[in-house]
Image (cartoon, rainbow, N blue to C red; front, side):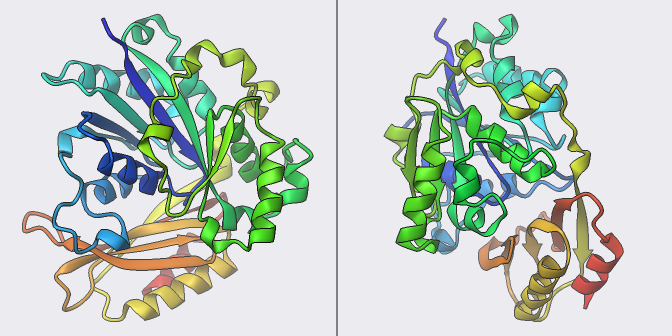
Length: 344
């Protein structure tokens, strides 16, 4: 029986994982793909983005994602696949394998806070190893966000993560298991900074791992798919910080949903959102907005201080029009203050 190749897409919050998957779907060249999406939070946004347009550039494109149906995307809202491999992930794979037309390649998008090593280890389990193999682990990096955080180019070169910073620990683990690292959003970084950052990241990578610059996560499918890494057979060469420390605690992060009524002025909402990100330990905001007088759903996203907004697709007749935003940050967010600020 031919084993179905699977590609694990990892990377921190807002790095561009969903954009990468959309690009690969659009350039699948006839391959039947399926996607497993893992969300950190109770409201699934990425699955909806994949089923809708998901990018400002294709907001008016009536084709959407060619050949993609709701059954092709499995959403797991457990927050972290690495903690629920047996209970959630393996049954999800079994359902895909048992379909009348099973996928020819599986894309797995982990949440931005997930550790990829435990998920990778699951592919070595006998009940799954006979059915699939890890074609490769893709780590997506937001170049601009990386430069703006404490783990800048100089400290990256030390090849050690700071154990008192959970964000850096997650980033280090994602980098440690990668077969291909995609340095995304390079158009937001000055050439001199990009060169220094590339050198620092390259110094952290295992031998043979390629660092690929990209804009809007546009990486050729021929490069991202077909790595043939069989990563489940190469676990010992991928030691991670949490593995060496012997612990893994998601209590460092939290998320919650803010539900609002129709928004009359999206610019004011974005202004309030920018102020919230600046004054609270918010790492990521994403969601959909019902804007008064508009038939299209507006997507709102924040990665650090960078905000974006665009119309995604028309609201469907069978769905509830509502404004819902997922707020993700380090533990201890002042939820009441954030809700009050968003409500204006």
